[in-house]
Length: 177
Image 1 (cartoon, one colour):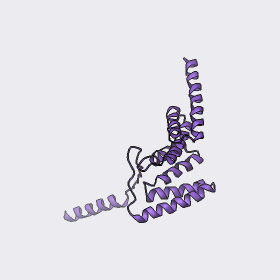
Image 2 (spheres, rainbow, N blue to C red):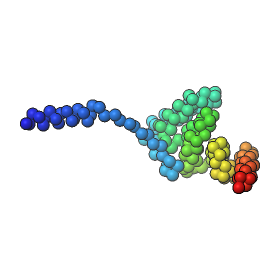
Image 3 (cartoon, rainbow, N blue to C red):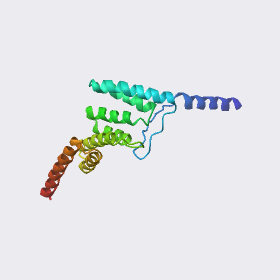
């Protein structure tokens, strides 16, 4: 009888640990939570190098390669706000507007705000929101971008464009009723 229990326990052990299929789920922090800092100085340096490489690819129009570099920059230092911004820009260039939105939100959070940078981030966020037809929030983001940088003419044009689109949508709704 003890031999039977020994064989059963070995069989169960092998069954449990040898055939198990594992799924790894990687979750990115939502806009409500701040990303964790880089674990050490080396990761911060690596993040900066990936950011610089990503910018080179981005400026050459090689968006998939730039996307890889920016993802590596964010993986090394999740608080690299500039990497999040450029990651969002790459998603826009590849027409993945929904994917760009959380990146822009992450890049606009935190301390040490530079109004011109935040204005560019808000403008980019507004553009993605406009593309997915979230017009009310898009207009609000364009207005924030314009208020942070009154020289941001593109934000002003975005406000006017979204107001016009919202006017057309409201007219359509009135006609349907």
